[in-house]
Length: 217
Image 1 (cartoon, helix red, strand yellow):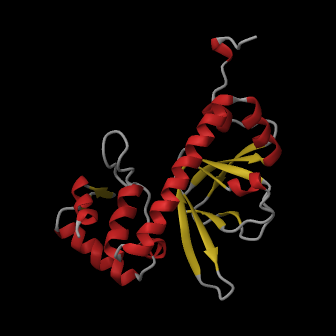
Image 2 (cartoon, rainbow, N blue to C red):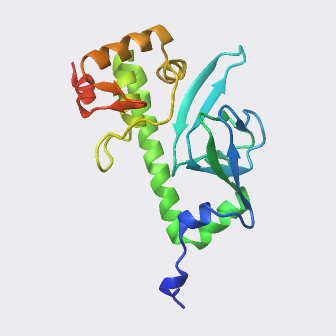
Image 3 (tube, helix red, strand yellow):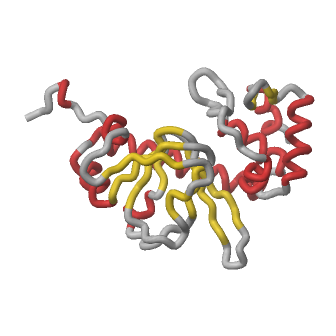
């Protein structure tokens, strides 16, 4: 029998509540959600704040490989048999994160089409972003990589145009994301500000004109 309208499954309500196989936890800035090489046994969902994924080499060198914001999953490798975490997840700012055990995640993906649709949309968006990131690293200058990162952080392309970046992201973190040095990031940020591409008013405001940097030959 088809579900009544009042009984329809709400994926976001599911992800925001505590019940069988899932918990909601608050993490302070720089708090570790999971560490690289830990057992991979759950999927996580950002309710509030931002989370960065950091990979550390055997030589101790660190690289930021992703920043996840509200409405995004991370740690999905557990669903494809990944035994250990490939990265460390840290709170970029104070945040609230839902942890869903692997078995519960598999159950709800199987039983609830609405949840499967939400998760599939996330995976397709993530896959597209990974491909864009690879092209960005291979062919674009550090200036263009910084411009693209700022536009992504400001949710460029979503309804309403770029949004203020309320989360305070250090120049060191931006440098790690785009693969350059902090002085280079500082140089480009000052350049963008002087050209009117970005502005500061208690938070970083990214303007649509910053897109012109990506269109330069």
